[in-house]
Image: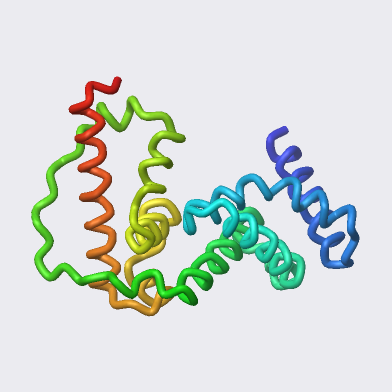
Length: 190
């Protein structure tokens, strides 16, 4: 039964993809409605500016519609769409040189362990709000490494930085987040 359901879902998805390839407006609208909320959150996570994220959302769907024929079926379609949007956001950040003020930490200080009970008490929205407060360079690398699963080499190649800069940005992002968590803990927030 699960196998049949999966095949049905894949067939529906392929029908939608085929419609978008044919420039069918109804299929384009359905694809947009299906992925817009998720992709807006991806865009916002990278740029932390709602208006810019909305602009990137529109640009991203134009890219998806124009390049959907290149989707080979390897991996999930949602993953392919997310990759298009992630790449678009990274391109935007590169053009705006978000890491120009980034410094390489040759010998980052030893990180203290976060209070995981504090993290568990936070909602996903509260945690995303704390991540959104990160400086742009830190947030970009943190999103790519911790959330999207890129390696430091892939991040370096994508952003035109060194691997050590990527690692230091991630380390600094973690330090910032840990400091924020400690502040929340000391405020007695439960």
